[in-house]
Length: 266
Image (cartoon, rainbow, N blue to C red; front, side, top):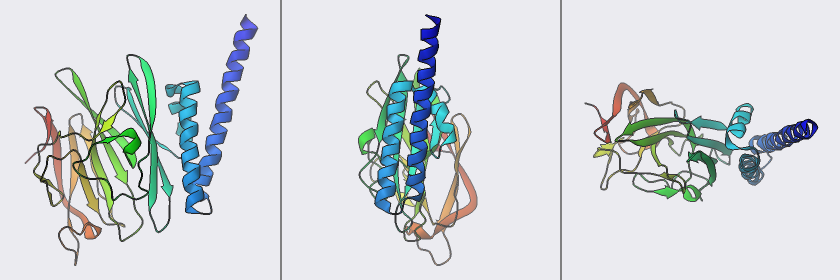
């Protein structure tokens, strides 16, 4: 019996290393492949391999093993939500984004791919709501978690880079609604009439900070329930609403969770 258990453990270890070696190979092609099509196919195969590894080896073991690979892994403070992000270089400074959402419900882990249909970022709106299969996520670099009336609320902080000066970069405050059937992205949890020089005609389901390539802008959590956001404005010769010409000012605005909504503090 002891030998049988040892053989099973060795086989599991071998299988995991084989899967991770395959992920490493696809990750290299994803970043260095000769054409945009080859890079996109490699990224999608890498995504599929990670999903397969989660199914065979479990989500926690896979998340731990991914630390050595060129993917971005963000895990909520309570450990019940993980978002894995891949940025796949395309042409003219664009990226395609692929990812995986993994979540725990009643002590059981589930996972789904996040993909979207667009290889650029034009389809994401401030008032849309998306399922995993329809969501073109970007790179999730942090997950904010707050609790009210026994309900846990999540926000993903997302970066959509661009190296094309004709397209703005984005940082996004993205509500994640978690249920047994998987996460949905976007929810009207913001008590704001406008943001980043955009006036909302309908309640915002996410906040999108847009700015020029070649500059940086920050959205970061400074403590539970409080996020600090750089204020932006048109740079020299820029016009209001032309986000390709926006850059940070010296001002910052705190976004705080208060009475069940996220509000910009005065």
